Image (cartoon, rainbow, N blue to C red; front, side, top):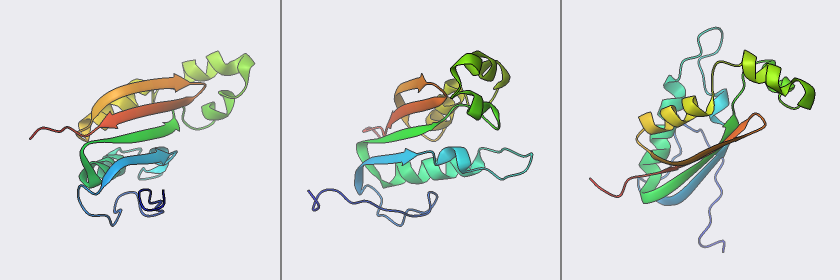
Length: 130
């Protein structure tokens, strides 16, 4: 299997792989941390990474994203069953709909997007057409 699977640890915005050289790309809790910092929570770096991932995928290739749907201290609350509802009420950013829109804006076709206890699992597919 080592001749077909390549594990890479690299900069999410510059993978160093040839265009169209991957069938599947997975990213766990990467996009959540790609922002400009401070009070400015821009999606520019997230889009840059997603577009790089799109570039290295073969047509029909898939990206599987595991990430957080809560921000700040509300993410801690997501793990406490009694206050989970409060954490959902207080979180207004990085909802499943936000992640879905971001992945679509980068050029992926979103195949699925599911949320479980403060986490999202999203599968995007690179188009096979022109």
